[in-house]
Length: 99
Image (cartoon, rainbow, N blue to C red; front, side, top):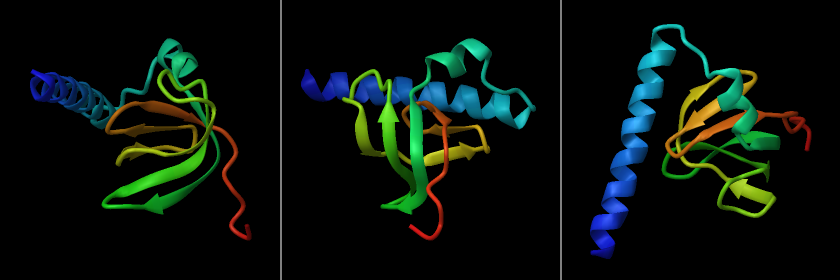
């Protein structure tokens, strides 16, 4: 049962991601409400793990305490927001390259 619950959650994430990606490809952007509800990732930089992701300080994440995180895989990146496998993030200031 536990594995089934995980698979259903993952399937819902992928469905949500696919819906968002199709919209972005059509020129749509997240609504003001979606962006307002999204956690903010501060002092972020591109990073890699098995996939390209972001490292940064998260604020307002629905499941994680405020603090350093590594996001899931990036699917769409703009100067103001990013869509990862699991969620939408607003982007705050980028970490300077010399740090």
